[in-house]
Image (cartoon, rainbow, N blue to C red; front, top):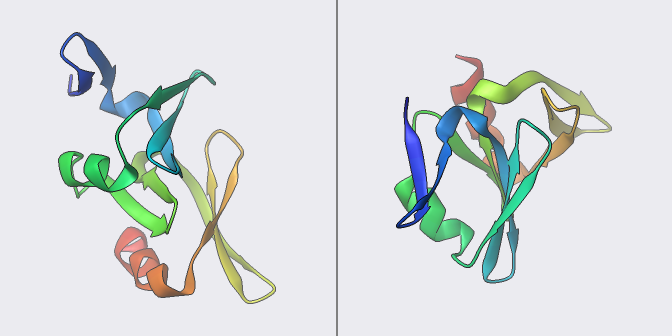
Length: 104
């Protein structure tokens, strides 16, 4: 199993990460069991460390694990991704090309 290390002795299984949300200079990890973990690193720093083939940025403050996508849909000219945990996350216009990569 693949793990992501937040600190030396603190790790998360990659498959358990649903999405990440930036909170100023912190990052909030949303996990498949419904729990959340806060990290003192920026979202950009996590983006550099996480595998590109599984984790993609969908807007300025969010990054998703593509394995947890339930569906992609459009509502009022805005694209959304519904995650398996039921959350609908907005995809920025600038990141719409990301949807093509996910869908293929």
